[in-house]
Image 1: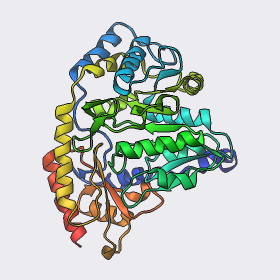
Image 2 (image 1 turned 60 degrees about the vertical axis):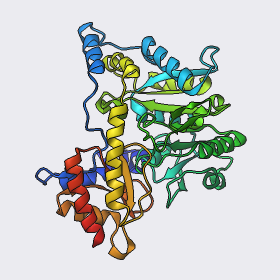
Image 3 (image 1 turned 180 degrees about the vertical axis):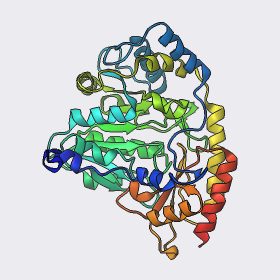
Image 4 (image 1 turned 90 degrees about the vertical axis):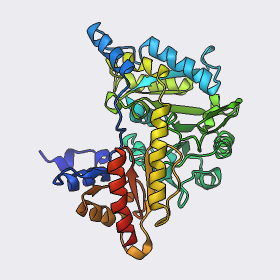
Length: 394
């Protein structure tokens, strides 16, 4: 057989993630300070674990409905009605489905919306799956919205990129890899732009609960309540926004691969049809477990991460350009031009000092920055920041 002849153009158009390269570089290190990892360092809350265990013991290990177990979907709907003020679930205008992680939801959305020749607009920097969504859907390349240097995906930056071929705009807030969180005004402008052009706005909100107090804003519907700004909270959003959220980052169960999507019923219906022939359903025991997540208070954990964010800003902001993260557990800082180094070369220099970070080129058309994760114990973060600061000083 000739693999070069048999492999599809689709897989040949997709590169291996740049994150894997860092793992390969660090494989020979002994106990490295790992500031590259994209998952939380706290355990899954006990009520969630016990619920999953009970489901396994009760033999709830078979297939579920494609859209998820009714009990979990009911909790999701109730949560979104309360959190976003959506009312369309009752009359069928809106729908929700459980997915195999947020990445699964993003792929289903791309498959449901993109045809060959279509376009979607994504931020640059981006989460690594974003530019590959249209490639996996057989629709070509994504259109990059340059958000440097402040990493804010604003309507002014998006509008020139919209064409008659645009099928959706994808935003993420708080963002991976930057941690930047949009304001309510920025969310409103972006939603109004998409609505005026007749394209859906897909909101990747995997970090919807992981927003720090100084980035939260008053709920447009209840000013006494402070929440993460989101286009989905705004008036009229229910008919134009596809919200994608998950459980892994907030509740420390990334390996369970549990997310959900909600939005206009025609979109969710077709995504569910595609899930029937691909993922089939999300893991059953994990679905039963995360029902308990809606009753778990993670505010203490988020406050601890906010303090770590402050450690990062205090150590690195005086030495380089570092937009202050408003959520998630990532920071994205620039390599000073005077060092004459790409992000990849800086990451290699970090490996030489037993520290792992991810070069910005893994998340962007540029390689001028580095992503670090502060999802590590405070003492290791402090040691790693000291080494990074030393390297930034040159």
